[in-house]
Length: 121
Image (tube, rainbow, N blue to C red):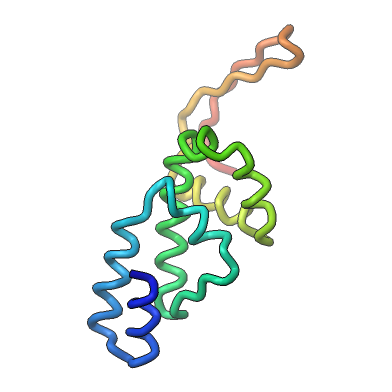
């Protein structure tokens, strides 16, 4: 589908490009978002790249526990792309992933600190 999307850009078929972009976004899942965000050889049309990558970030944030379980090296892969972690954090804040959630932190299995995040930074 991405190959077809690139061809629609090359031949200036804007209506078909919109359909292909929608299909790519619709098919994003835990198995393919990492590639969309980290594969430097994957060239998306400039008119579609931002929308597809934003959608991929949303899927990555919502599916991160599953992705991390399947791919323990995901953090290393993501850190290879400059600025990706900060953009993921900003996207998570925009999606209110942290708002009103309770977090627990244990330090050396002795102290348990419980806090509630009220507002994003």
